[in-house]
Every structure is written in C-alpha cells, then in structure tokens.
Image (cartoon, rainbow, N blue to C red):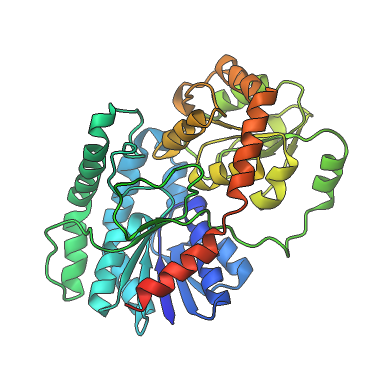
Length: 398
C-alpha cells in the first residue's frame, strides 16, 4: 500500500511518526512523511521518504516568552499555514491508499483524505478520545471525575472552533464543501503504553493504545566521550527538556544544578537555549542520543514530560522527575504520580531548586526505583510499532 503520514509539531511529535513510517516500510508498504523541516532528522537517518511542510516551529517556540503564549503561538502557526499544508499534502498524497494524520495538521489531514477519497487514520501520542476514566490531557489541573468526559468534549469542540474557519478556507481551495461538525468516526491509534494509561472501558472499538513507537537504534554508534563518561562512575542523572524553548532557562538551570548536587549528570540542551558551559564539572553535555540506548544506562531522568521522553524513561525502568511547561506534560506527571514514581506535581513556570531537590530525593528512594523497574518490565513486553502496523493495514484496506 501507499501511505501518506501528515503531522506537524516538535521533534517529539514527529520522531514517533517516523518510527511508525519506518515500520510500515519494513512491512512492505510505501510511505511518505510530511512534517516540519527541523524535525525530519530521524526520518532522514532511517531513509524514510519525507518532505518539509511550510512553517518554522522551532522559531515559533524560541521566541522570547513563547512558553507563556504557546497555545496562541502554535494556533496562529497552524491557521496561517492550513492552505499551504492542504496543497502540499494533496500533492504528496496523489495515488495513496490512506492518510495517517496527527498533530496540528489533523483537520487538514482529515480533509485531504476526504478529497482523495481514501481512509483517514488518526494517530496521537496523547489519549484524546472522550472517556470517564481521566480528564482531557490538555488540562493543567485535574477536575472532579464527574467532568472527565465533558472535558474531552469541550476541548475537542474548542479546537474545532479555533481551526474551523482556516480549515474550511483550505477545503474550499481544494474543492470540498465546508465542514460544520468535528470529525469523530475515524479510527484513532495512540502511541501510548497501556501500562501507563489503562485502556478505558468506555472507548469506541476503533480507539487503540498500541504502545510507544520507537525508532530503531541498532545502527547508532555512541561517541567515545560519552562511553568514557558512562564507564567512569555510577549511573548518571539524565537532564533534558526536549523541544521546550522560550522559558526562563536561567532559573531552571539554577534549580537543576541545586537539585542534582554533586551527582554525575548528562545534560542535553535540546531546543532550550541553555548553555552547557555554565554548568558545573559533574555535568557532561551531550547532543541527541537515542533514548532507548541512553536511558537504561542512567539512574533517573529530569525532563519536561513529553509523551516520548516519559515513555522512554518508564520503558528503561528508571524514575522520572517531570518539570512540565505546557500541554499534555502535566498529564504525564499525573500518570507517574499515580504509579508512585513522583511524589508531587511540579511546574516549569514556578520551579525552584528546593522543590526540584525534594523530587529528586524522592525518585532516589529504593522503593521508588523498584516501582519504576516493575513498570519498565511491563512496557518492554509491548511492541507498539508492530501493533500499530497491523491496525493501519486493517483500517487502510476498508
């Protein structure tokens, strides 16, 4: 089959879709991935055919104070590029058998599938199908359980209202009639572990938790300096905040240094703009290293709580200390607190060295490390890509 994957987001959003695309290619299918130019490195490394969509998410997130206005900034980016995304996706998708849609391009992707008259398959790294089991992952707080399903419905409708006009303008250019209601009938595949999020009993039959989608790393070679550091002492603390940018990095860096103390640590600046040269000598700076190789060699991970990093740390069997900034990151912190791996909620906008140090001390406790190891053992039995490939094949052939 010929498949188009359409997504837009950070590296953490695109990398799992590239992993799924690679798994589909290995299963004998032809795949083309469309995503932001700065997030295509994993796809290019694996040889997955890919093209850049219009826009610049890295510049959008790196703007001063961007974390305080992240929803508005990303919304403007998507609204401003919906027409271009539609044209690019229609061009790339001619002759395909199904469109796999995700992220900020979801409404455009669903429209593209309609225009091409092929099935649309939704994919997400965050469980958004309405349920009473938990509230919308995009809420920065936990409402009373009675409002769980309503919070999902409200978020879906709010998202549709926000993007409806731009989507319908793009649809008109493609010769499609205006869409008045939110899409709800297409299948949804979630690159989420059922060990972290138990499958809700009230989900529709076409909503699936497949497990994490992980790019293969068997051909990756670690740099000698990293191997030397790992071999020189006890397992280090991993510190990295992924694609987060535009926040008060000086305050966060000070909090991290205080909380880590004299422990050995690996630091990945990612998109943060944090300067490794300002860190103490016990911090070893690194670039991108595949998490499935690195995190099993670490003692714990301090990170922003993106779905991918949270899953990778959990899969490695090590505790996480999540410092969330926006979106679903608070949700993943709550998942780890429910698993007994984090003690209290933290916030990137209010972090202090004292609070972060307490969280690190809690994660260092023997019983917490044991809980993390048990969780990791469960997750390592999952094969998210294989499960998702079988589901894509099923839904694409309908």
